[in-house]
Length: 233
Image (cartoon, rainbow, N blue to C red; front, side, top):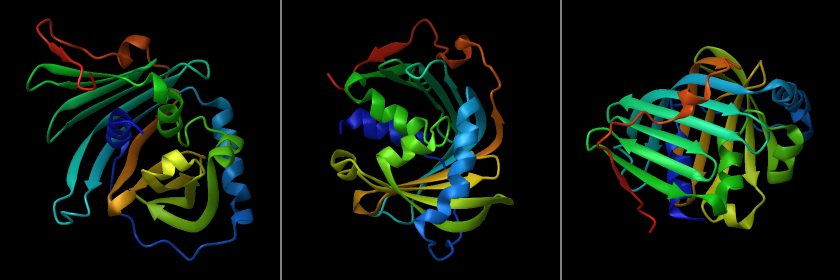
């Protein structure tokens, strides 16, 4: 997996600490939760939410990186996914994903890093869409699923699912995922476990489903004198 893929997935991670989950339940008990996910996926077109992100590095456990901002995601047809993440605190940056390109804009230095992720487009879409427009069949095709049990996140009742990637390539970097599914069938928290003990834990709040944003809302708003760089070249 290429560096831009890991970076892009890392940008999506957001966080609030979660309590210890209940004892695992048999996988077949996940049926009702997967039904909710299926029902939500059937009508999903777009999502907006506030976000808070924590990235934990095992080598420096007392210095988690924490930032917050907003996320906007829109899907046209199945292969038309666009996303804009605007992180505002404490270090402003904006991430845009569209087609086969990821752009990261750093306003303090007026610079955009652009990555061609065409080789990893389907993998990126899998992560960005995890729980948003993803059917149970698609989840079961890519992951081994297990229901951990009920949990509460931000005062909301959820069911915690554990997802183990089936792809050997993905497993080289991503050990497992956890997804806290709310009663409406959408995740309000996600946790990505990386090799070496690192993790990224994601929490969404003030979520709006199908707000129908214009395409212009998912594009970077750049000054004329911005510098564009291509780190992967």
